[in-house]
Image 1 (cartoon, rainbow, N blue to C red):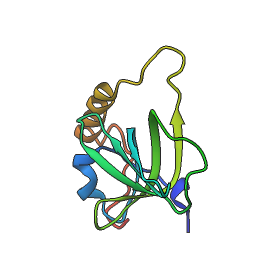
Image 2 (cartoon, rainbow, N blue to C red):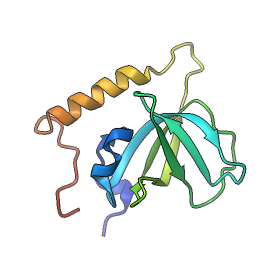
Image 3 (cartoon, rainbow, N blue to C red):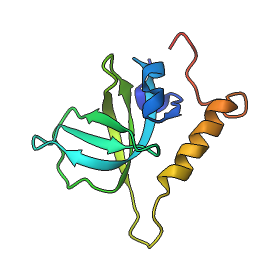
Length: 122
């Protein structure tokens, strides 16, 4: 069976979480708060809504800025992260979360042109 990193994953925002319960997703957001345990953190999407991310192991680095998370959405709407990547913003160009959110809407509106979804059988 293919791992979560090997299968197509839709890019989603907070308002789409409930549509992807128990499915792999890709989520991009700006880090809001990191729990003192380092095992959970919250991120804000392009609509200003907040998602909770849970990790298997505590963070070993400071987490801030924009992050891309690959994981499964739990029944509670929490993203259980398999991996995450920091998106650098230190070259003077800030990541535009609102524009990214508009791109997500296009992906959702035209799935036949952007076939990154997992089929209904999961």
